[in-house]
Image (cartoon, rainbow, N blue to C red; front, side, top):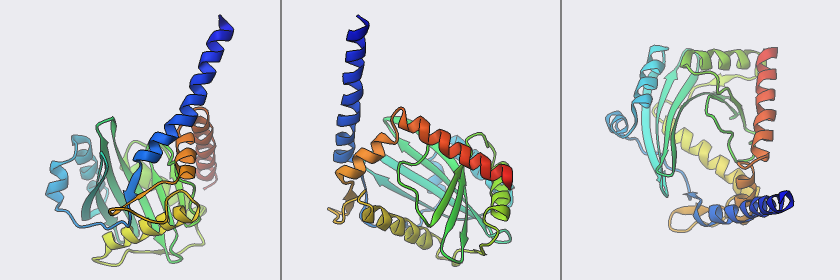
Length: 244
């Protein structure tokens, strides 16, 4: 009986690891090139949840002024975001809502700083690690336990002052903040294409993943790889913060 259950479980495990990436391969798309058009703040507020509104108020209460808003969709996933900035600290906060009818809506603030060598630090409290491989131009730290904006900002400043003390922070070009974010997204996409995660050629304005990308990204979100990655990344983030 036990051997039969183990056999069935093994087949299910193999099936998930083999077939689920094929579903991702057939459905996962992103824009061929990112272009972020400005959307009125009122429109984004109408299309987002109360949690998003509360966080927007909290961000502004922490000294970050509203800069711009945008939105884009990929298949059934709709992404809305607002960008806030503090010029004195040269810090930015992107408040994002990702909605899909098949999964719970995710809303999170992301504190960022751009440096003069065109590298970026991102600190956020999203619950899941990204499936993409790390970029040499971006260092990302996740602190899911940080549930308020002031804590995220304090963590970011502490890490920058210690771990990235040798870098020089810069502000986004005035009036071209969305254009700058789109450029960074497109450069990150170029890295993923070079690493074989996304196809070189687009189709009808969209770009699909490769089989390699579909399998690697899906596996990173499945047990036990997901738990191993989360544990390793959390340990690194806590180590950096503890030493700051």
